[in-house]
Length: 184
DNA sequence: AGAGCGATGGCCT
DNA sequence: GGCCATCGCTCTA
Image (tube, rainbow, N blue to C red):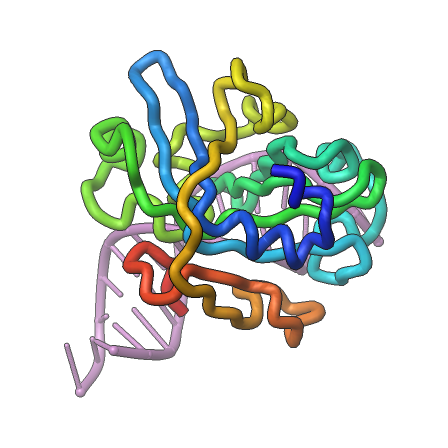
């Protein structure tokens, strides 16, 4: 996972195919990352753009940690911190392909379809919220961690979703033809 | 298939 | 006080 220290846009591409795991009391829940977005420090759409605050502090910490934020009053979204410590960069995980613990995901989501094809959906499916903000994803004994997965067959590049600033950059990536990407 | 909108709370000015 | 890196229900076709 050395690539997390690379340029954040490149890191977002390389996170495709990596497996995100949450070890819970009710079992191991995991999914392969199939869609990401890069948020750079000099990027008006990034939470870190206006400097460090209590909320976004994790983004300014070391790469490979988990940044979880709360939005729209009811949703959590999950990011992997990238780049050098102090820069404030991260990659938003927008979609997963479910691998293990699908029964747990169904329970967490309260439905049996569309488990992980959106940033807030996958956070709920894996049981991730404010409590996991800041955990180290690169440590073996961590409850939430990243594991090496498959190399994607193909990568599609588009502009990012759901932002109003800095709209034109092609910083969203997904595995071409993967059925679990979020729509739009 | 697609547009409209309500739910719901923390963060920032 | 207004804004949100959202989701899913409800309406119109």
